[in-house]
Length: 335
Image (cartoon, rainbow, N blue to C red; front, side, top):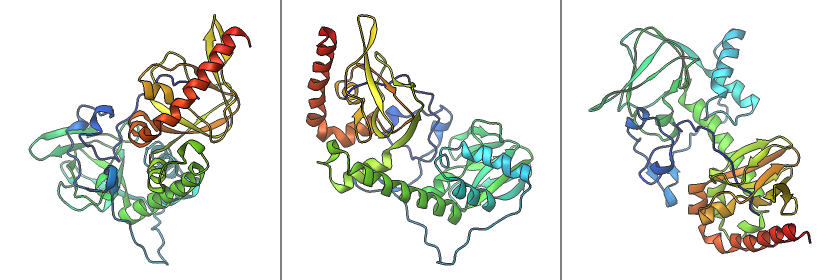
């Protein structure tokens, strides 16, 4: 059913995703950061990134480096805000924090060098780093815990690619380094758990039944979780539409302004139901407001992924347009 999304928040540059000409039009990339070259990676069908899975021995244990409570708290605060780790549970986050090793660098010292193999992911605690690209020069600065961007080195680890730039200490710098194996093992485990969970859920969503297993897995990989409190507006009538929503848990209601009054224009939507599709299909503004009836969790797909993966289902999705129109007409006539 339609109900349609409100204003998007400012979206930080997604440093864990390689840029491509196909995706660039919808990315939010800082001017300086856009100068960074994309890593050389291999892609499979539909542009899916192919990175080798890390293999560890059965008795593998992540390294542990002792830290004071203040250091742990500061690292948790810094790392938990990072898009790479934002969905990790407390146990996985504890492993990440414990495995980080404190590293000090002097002014002018290269922390990583372009073209070399990546072995560590870095979070800057204090100081400033400068990023240089061969043939381009300096492209950006990275600061410490209080800075909007305080990490680097993830691309080479995620995509098994050489370092895309050189990072040099502009002065004394304190970093925390996370080894490649722990970094990939934790993220891989989280991704696999998420994929399995979402695949199981998506198999129960009727509108997605015509899709192949591969297509459902691709959707599972692309989905983001968003949570909403009771009475919170998820999308707002008249706003631009940027996402498609599937209700995972909770309940929402669709409302439309009819003669100055917010009027329900659909049955309540619960787990497995969806909304937000019509503005994406028709390239129109949101046709209704969708509000959470109670605490609700939704799985969301951005506009571009929706068009690419759910295009074949457009006919099925449009069937709801007729139902929605009938609800609106009934609401207007009071029937």
